[in-house]
Image (tube, rainbow, N blue to C red; front, top):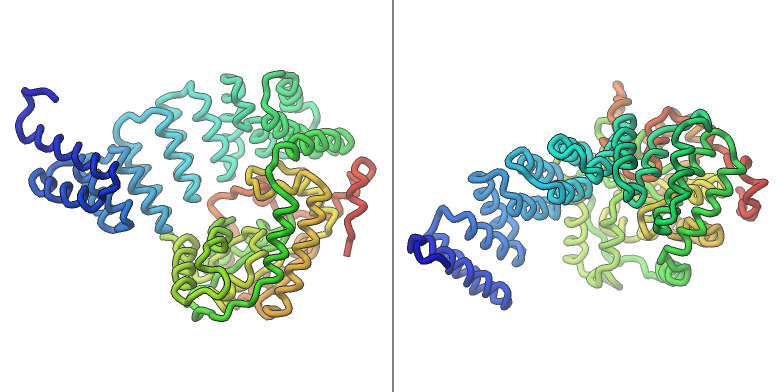
Length: 513
């Protein structure tokens, strides 16, 4: 330490080092006492405030931590360490808009490097605030226009927000300026951002050129094959599409950690579980769970319902699956455990940006947890989406999923197992909760979306909506239905399997009801 520093500064630094040493030793009480005393002696110290906020965060006194971090940011809005810590606290509390606002404000002050910008983008994206994340990406690109990683992130976000033309510009830049862009799924992003009308489109050759490379990882090669298959499917070249889909799925299946044995064990456990002995009281808002096999219309149902001004679509949340794994909820959980779980989930579902009274969680695989849903919210509504089994299987097999939970989708035999178990478990739940479940058939929805959604709205007891708001769709879509869900409802996906039957005989093994 420099001896020419003022004594007060040296004392502050000494205290800070002692606080950090106590934290490292696990003595949080001692660290808190020392930091609090030092802050009284040095009330302007940003470092001591940040250190004390970190202690409060570790001891789950989030309100105290938030107060201190806000004080730090009031002095220096560009303090990235304080901004990220505060954003994480707000995110945990379900205050997603506030978390995004903190990071947006931080990046409007000072010069932050690309790695920090990417960290902010990922955090805000995880909060479901893709427009704000895209704004940070665009601002970062303005300062560092040659950074291909930033362009890849901007493209990924703008596909989700429906800015397809801008997304393509970013993906093309990334591909042209960095050989790693294939590893960042830029080709798949390009294919997701439009429906091809001709095999003469430059992307076809672009994808083939990328496939000719010998330095691609198997994961990148798989997503590239999915992109090329999708492009050929768009133009009706089903034989070539089938060949590319088969190669893509073979690679993806070899990479996935999804286990049929583990799935079956978990499924049988759900079937054998005893009903919850306790149920909480209804709330003044209604959770709506849209479940079923992925690719059975869950995204479309959620998007159409969310046009009602009293409905908010939160997309696919992981929180119910996470809560189901908590030991406190096993067996016959105590009421306090149920209340804590309900409060935790409600914060993530309701968040801080909507006065809606119906909130949608459209995670399809939540069909595993209907008993937990209805123990936490006896008035919850469950919408079960169903679709022609062959169309569902083909649609799953045609997708490159990011989530490991969808690892079964790369093998028709695994798809058949999950599909059969979905039907088994839903039939089981109907024995106990039939009044809480409403079925929607994809084919009926595609043929008559207005009446199908009107009937669903009546069942949900939504108030009459004399002025529908068709533009009030969710701010972003982060599922495999990125392109389709933003198009007018169409019927061309009904019995799509017939186009592939000559090249995928496995489809004929699926029972069609």
